[in-house]
Image (cartoon, rainbow, N blue to C red; front, side, top):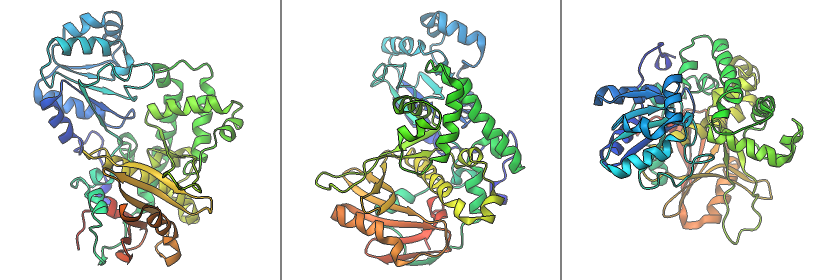
Length: 422
């Protein structure tokens, strides 16, 4: 697909850059956080070059040793800077706090981190009121296509879709899902090379990077947990069952999954609930933040899916979750994302809730044909929330947007990133 071609070393504009630059205008410290190899360093270098800021990466052993041994002295020598991979020297956080308290001018530091900086070993309130955190996940489909930030969330909460519009199909949907969005993977033209890179990436995180945020005695088991978590992606999470596969208890799995969440590998999507409704399932679902990584871990290729279309479903669901998370990260009013399932096994893949309580339901369907019964979960959710229900959407592999009832729509998956208003 021509619109997905990315040449090695090519800069792809990131939609988060506008938010980062705006935050530097009025906030003392701005933190770009996301998984390794998601493009944080490239974006931070671009801003450093444009602003004439020193760029320091703590992947450099010499800088890292200095920062760890004398964090106050290290910060004293850098009155304003970009500091990359700051989680590799956590003691810098308190030194940063001291520095910006002494000189509270906005925009002094841009920092990046490959873990959720304000959980785990770093006190969550150590920079409260001094830092704005902006997520940078792997490329979104809109970024790959070099188009404007998606309007999908705002349109969904306003139910701003046509009653009927022919949009055309989502080009190359299987390839989009299986490839994911990691820049280093997309630079590799051969699918087999992409899968090899992604599997090596997962191993590296488990064997090396986790040591930056926690001490884990059985790192081999972490790698096994990633593999088994991939098998469970999109399903209700059962910690005990997952632990039994690798010989550890459910509490250990819970702690290790928290590490993977801090490293932006996976997220537990909570079950939607409402007081007074007693028939709802409370277990979360597990989703990977990159569908390409999930496919590589499951050894699923585009050819595999072409032979057995049913295999696309779980991967497409994680793909949609990833696109929703990337779009939500750009919003000043970020919606909470959960899932709905009741004891009748009626479910909605994603429930988006935005202040002051408006709700959008999204169901994902790998096929191109949508039938009335496919709206059962969305209708159940509509009944449960009443006037708070903004709209319900089935995302499918078809070629048109169609209204299917009161505040109910079916539309191609590409509407997640295509600002089509036919």
